[in-house]
Length: 122
Image (cartoon, rainbow, N blue to C red; front, side, top):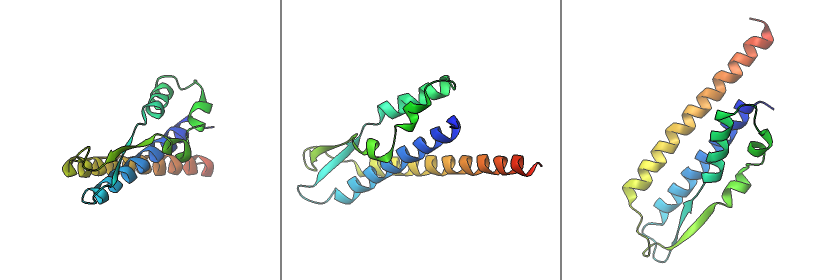
């Protein structure tokens, strides 16, 4: 297993789910009685930080992080009126995650391009 590829995969999954949560909250802001969501991915972020600090660490920890396990960390905050969603904050979060997602995807593309060059012997 390539630790870099696993870390990028987890990062892409994290950002995708964060974008889903933000976009769902944006869509629900004007719906009376709608449940707002919050994602707490601190465990996955800690696993990524550990992998960055110790590349020879436990790769199974990253392999165990899947979109399904990450979805278990999305919780409802309750009705929209109970915890006000600041629309600007949600849109800023969505934009930040979008840029991060694109950066990770670009890094992954470059990694594959280098691997392709190595295989081709260039």
